[in-house]
Image (cartoon, rainbow, N blue to C red):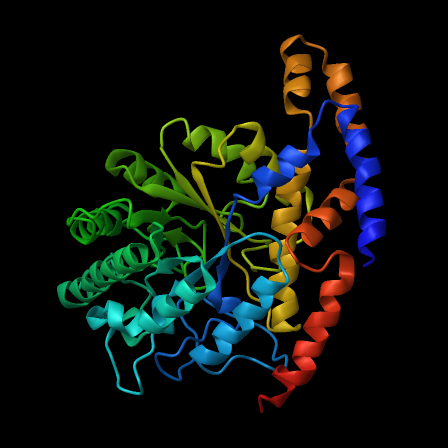
Length: 420
């Protein structure tokens, strides 16, 4: 895209926004300080490098688009390409199954920071931070649908030890990269049909979490997060780690609560939950996804729900207390493009929220002038935020407009098509 034309368009847009009392230059500086945590599993369909086994535990990726990453080096190369197509500096989120074990089997309760040193060294070279996740699915000891809430003490202990090992890995990532690692705990535990005993598994889960989190870790290195879910494949009727369970646990134990955009009733939105939970919690984690009829983890796009999430973060001045991560995986389209579309959508909606005259709108609301509030919100939808976005991209040496697709297609031709 022609730089001169982008700069002229931005100058006109800047003037228009100034008429609403908005400083777009200040908004762009602020946006550059907000990292998005990209999820490694978009690049290989949640397979990981632990073993060659089918997905289980309520996880499913659909599609078989050519070019899937087959090892850690290929996946890191793909992430590098995506990062080059995004404005700003971001992060990478890795699951425990993405360890590098040099072909030697390593059980999940025995993983160590050394198995992720390649990722840490790569992140150092990229100048980015990392986040981490224990993997409580796709394992023989999770085949019956229970892990941390398992009634078999041996299996329960195995998963507790896995969680303890993962916190140590997260802490080492945070130490070496000098940026706190958010280690997020999600488990698939639950029943397909209606259970008689709802209480028992939750009491076991609480005990297991207490054991996992027993060792204090410097929050400058690692922050613990817990993630709920409404239902899953194989746990349609009852999930042990419900929203209410984890909300209570997070408040009582000062943990981050993870709100996943696909983990609630279809009529619920996580944007409406943010101010409520942050009234009682210091920080939260967001997993930004797009559910279509269920928790289907579609590629994030500029939906009303995504815009509402971004608006709530900005209007509530929550950006310093919220960790934004992406969580989707689509194997039916070019994976580099999927990553890029979702990431750019999230960043762009944050920009749209930042160039809103929030204080002016808030004053109208406080004064009871709801007519003016609605009228202005509608007018803002026609403002030239695209010109501001293109300028932001060029300022950060990222492609403006649809030009990033040229790079993605070239990468597909030069790199992805050779993976047979």
